Length: 214
Image (cartoon, rainbow, N blue to C red; front, side, top):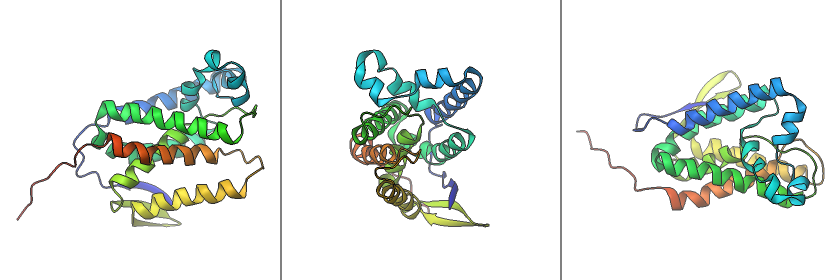
Protein backbone atom coordinates (compact mmCIF):
# COMPACT_ATOMS: atom_id res chain seq x y z
CA UNK A 1 0.00 0.00 0.00
CA UNK A 2 1.90 3.03 -1.31
CA UNK A 3 0.44 6.57 -1.19
CA UNK A 4 0.87 8.41 -4.48
CA UNK A 5 -1.16 11.61 -4.03
CA UNK A 6 -3.88 13.49 -2.18
CA UNK A 7 -6.40 16.29 -2.65
CA UNK A 8 -4.68 19.68 -2.99
CA UNK A 9 -7.66 21.68 -4.22
CA UNK A 10 -7.85 23.77 -1.03
CA UNK A 11 -4.12 24.49 -0.82
CA UNK A 12 -3.36 28.21 -1.04
CA UNK A 13 0.40 28.53 -0.43
CA UNK A 14 3.28 27.35 -2.57
CA UNK A 15 4.99 24.71 -0.37
CA UNK A 16 8.36 26.46 -0.37
CA UNK A 17 9.97 24.64 2.53
CA UNK A 18 8.62 21.26 1.49
CA UNK A 19 10.42 21.56 -1.83
CA UNK A 20 13.55 23.07 -0.28
CA UNK A 21 13.78 20.08 2.06
CA UNK A 22 13.36 17.70 -0.89
CA UNK A 23 16.13 19.44 -2.82
CA UNK A 24 18.51 19.49 0.15
CA UNK A 25 17.90 15.80 0.86
CA UNK A 26 18.64 14.84 -2.74
CA UNK A 27 21.77 17.00 -2.93
CA UNK A 28 23.13 15.66 0.36
CA UNK A 29 22.52 12.09 -0.77
CA UNK A 30 24.43 12.75 -4.00
CA UNK A 31 27.23 14.18 -1.86
CA UNK A 32 27.19 10.99 0.23
CA UNK A 33 27.66 8.92 -2.92
CA UNK A 34 30.73 10.89 -3.94
CA UNK A 35 32.28 11.58 -0.51
CA UNK A 36 32.05 8.02 0.78
CA UNK A 37 31.80 6.26 4.12
CA UNK A 38 33.95 8.68 6.12
CA UNK A 39 31.61 11.52 5.25
CA UNK A 40 28.56 9.47 6.28
CA UNK A 41 30.07 8.52 9.63
CA UNK A 42 31.24 12.07 10.34
CA UNK A 43 27.85 13.70 9.79
CA UNK A 44 25.46 10.97 10.97
CA UNK A 45 24.12 10.98 14.52
CA UNK A 46 25.83 8.31 16.63
CA UNK A 47 24.33 8.11 20.15
CA UNK A 48 27.49 6.92 21.91
CA UNK A 49 29.62 9.58 20.23
CA UNK A 50 27.05 12.26 21.04
CA UNK A 51 26.95 11.33 24.71
CA UNK A 52 30.75 11.46 24.83
CA UNK A 53 30.84 15.01 23.44
CA UNK A 54 27.37 16.62 23.18
CA UNK A 55 28.64 20.12 22.37
CA UNK A 56 31.10 18.96 19.72
CA UNK A 57 28.67 16.54 18.10
CA UNK A 58 25.48 18.61 18.34
CA UNK A 59 25.57 19.61 14.66
CA UNK A 60 24.92 15.99 13.68
CA UNK A 61 21.44 16.25 15.21
CA UNK A 62 20.64 18.41 12.16
CA UNK A 63 22.95 17.07 9.46
CA UNK A 64 21.74 13.51 9.98
CA UNK A 65 18.18 14.60 9.10
CA UNK A 66 19.24 15.17 5.50
CA UNK A 67 21.18 11.95 4.95
CA UNK A 68 19.93 8.60 3.66
CA UNK A 69 21.09 5.01 3.46
CA UNK A 70 20.15 4.36 -0.17
CA UNK A 71 17.97 5.34 -3.10
CA UNK A 72 14.94 3.46 -1.75
CA UNK A 73 15.29 5.14 1.66
CA UNK A 74 15.54 8.55 -0.01
CA UNK A 75 12.75 7.94 -2.52
CA UNK A 76 10.27 6.68 0.06
CA UNK A 77 10.89 9.59 2.40
CA UNK A 78 10.64 12.21 -0.33
CA UNK A 79 7.42 10.66 -1.66
CA UNK A 80 5.78 10.99 1.75
CA UNK A 81 7.14 14.50 2.25
CA UNK A 82 5.84 15.72 -1.12
CA UNK A 83 2.39 14.20 -0.67
CA UNK A 84 1.75 15.24 2.93
CA UNK A 85 4.15 18.11 3.61
CA UNK A 86 2.58 20.67 1.28
CA UNK A 87 -0.79 20.61 3.03
CA UNK A 88 0.74 20.82 6.50
CA UNK A 89 2.91 23.76 5.40
CA UNK A 90 -0.17 25.39 3.89
CA UNK A 91 -1.98 25.16 7.23
CA UNK A 92 0.93 26.19 9.47
CA UNK A 93 2.49 28.82 7.21
CA UNK A 94 6.10 28.74 6.02
CA UNK A 95 7.92 29.82 9.19
CA UNK A 96 5.95 27.61 11.58
CA UNK A 97 6.37 24.65 9.26
CA UNK A 98 10.15 25.16 9.21
CA UNK A 99 10.34 25.15 13.01
CA UNK A 100 7.87 22.27 13.25
CA UNK A 101 9.89 20.08 10.89
CA UNK A 102 13.13 20.49 12.83
CA UNK A 103 11.44 19.99 16.21
CA UNK A 104 9.94 16.71 15.02
CA UNK A 105 13.30 15.62 13.68
CA UNK A 106 14.99 16.41 16.99
CA UNK A 107 12.28 14.56 18.92
CA UNK A 108 12.77 11.55 16.65
CA UNK A 109 16.53 11.44 17.12
CA UNK A 110 16.39 11.61 20.90
CA UNK A 111 13.53 9.10 21.05
CA UNK A 112 15.74 6.59 19.27
CA UNK A 113 18.69 7.46 21.49
CA UNK A 114 16.55 6.94 24.59
CA UNK A 115 16.03 3.25 23.75
CA UNK A 116 19.64 2.60 22.69
CA UNK A 117 21.88 5.33 24.16
CA UNK A 118 25.15 3.41 23.81
CA UNK A 119 24.74 2.46 20.18
CA UNK A 120 27.68 3.17 17.90
CA UNK A 121 25.58 2.66 14.76
CA UNK A 122 25.15 5.81 12.62
CA UNK A 123 21.57 7.12 12.65
CA UNK A 124 20.52 9.01 9.55
CA UNK A 125 17.42 9.89 7.56
CA UNK A 126 14.54 12.33 7.27
CA UNK A 127 12.05 9.68 8.42
CA UNK A 128 11.62 11.06 11.93
CA UNK A 129 10.84 14.60 10.80
CA UNK A 130 8.52 13.30 8.07
CA UNK A 131 6.79 11.09 10.63
CA UNK A 132 5.98 14.33 12.45
CA UNK A 133 4.47 15.68 9.23
CA UNK A 134 2.31 12.54 9.01
CA UNK A 135 1.16 13.06 12.59
CA UNK A 136 0.17 16.63 11.78
CA UNK A 137 -1.66 15.58 8.61
CA UNK A 138 -3.59 12.96 10.57
CA UNK A 139 -4.78 15.58 13.06
CA UNK A 140 -5.58 18.24 10.45
CA UNK A 141 -7.04 16.15 7.63
CA UNK A 142 -8.12 12.72 8.95
CA UNK A 143 -10.87 12.28 6.35
CA UNK A 144 -9.02 13.68 3.35
CA UNK A 145 -8.78 11.13 0.56
CA UNK A 146 -5.35 9.79 -0.33
CA UNK A 147 -4.62 7.99 -3.60
CA UNK A 148 -2.96 4.69 -2.84
CA UNK A 149 -1.31 2.12 -5.08
CA UNK A 150 -2.68 -1.16 -3.74
CA UNK A 151 -0.95 -4.03 -5.54
CA UNK A 152 -1.98 -3.19 -9.13
CA UNK A 153 -4.88 -0.86 -8.43
CA UNK A 154 -5.16 2.81 -7.52
CA UNK A 155 -7.74 3.30 -4.78
CA UNK A 156 -8.81 6.18 -2.54
CA UNK A 157 -8.60 5.87 1.22
CA UNK A 158 -9.07 8.32 4.11
CA UNK A 159 -5.82 9.64 5.58
CA UNK A 160 -6.89 8.08 8.87
CA UNK A 161 -6.56 4.61 7.33
CA UNK A 162 -3.36 5.28 5.37
CA UNK A 163 -1.42 7.07 8.09
CA UNK A 164 -3.04 5.09 10.90
CA UNK A 165 -1.94 1.89 9.20
CA UNK A 166 1.59 3.25 8.82
CA UNK A 167 2.03 4.16 12.51
CA UNK A 168 0.45 0.86 13.58
CA UNK A 169 3.08 -0.93 11.48
CA UNK A 170 5.83 1.08 13.18
CA UNK A 171 4.49 0.19 16.63
CA UNK A 172 4.20 -3.51 15.82
CA UNK A 173 7.64 -3.54 14.21
CA UNK A 174 9.25 -1.84 17.19
CA UNK A 175 7.82 -4.54 19.47
CA UNK A 176 8.77 -7.33 17.09
CA UNK A 177 12.38 -6.19 16.82
CA UNK A 178 12.88 -5.27 20.48
CA UNK A 179 16.38 -6.26 21.51
CA UNK A 180 17.40 -7.03 17.92
CA UNK A 181 19.20 -5.01 15.26
CA UNK A 182 16.75 -4.38 12.42
CA UNK A 183 18.46 -1.54 10.58
CA UNK A 184 15.32 0.60 10.94
CA UNK A 185 14.97 3.18 13.72
CA UNK A 186 11.33 2.48 14.53
CA UNK A 187 11.42 4.47 17.75
CA UNK A 188 12.56 7.53 15.78
CA UNK A 189 9.45 7.17 13.61
CA UNK A 190 7.22 6.79 16.66
CA UNK A 191 8.85 9.69 18.51
CA UNK A 192 8.64 12.00 15.50
CA UNK A 193 5.00 11.04 14.90
CA UNK A 194 4.04 11.67 18.53
CA UNK A 195 5.84 15.03 18.50
CA UNK A 196 4.01 15.96 15.31
CA UNK A 197 0.62 15.28 16.88
CA UNK A 198 1.41 17.29 20.02
CA UNK A 199 3.00 20.20 18.15
CA UNK A 200 0.08 20.44 15.73
CA UNK A 201 -2.19 21.66 18.53
CA UNK A 202 0.35 24.45 19.15
CA UNK A 203 1.25 25.38 15.57
CA UNK A 204 -2.02 25.09 13.68
CA UNK A 205 -3.88 28.27 12.93
CA UNK A 206 -7.58 28.71 12.51
CA UNK A 207 -9.13 26.73 9.67
CA UNK A 208 -9.73 28.98 6.67
CA UNK A 209 -13.37 29.37 5.77
CA UNK A 210 -14.20 28.84 2.12
CA UNK A 211 -17.32 30.35 0.54
CA UNK A 212 -20.27 28.05 0.02
CA UNK A 213 -21.33 27.53 -3.57
CA UNK A 214 -25.02 27.27 -4.43
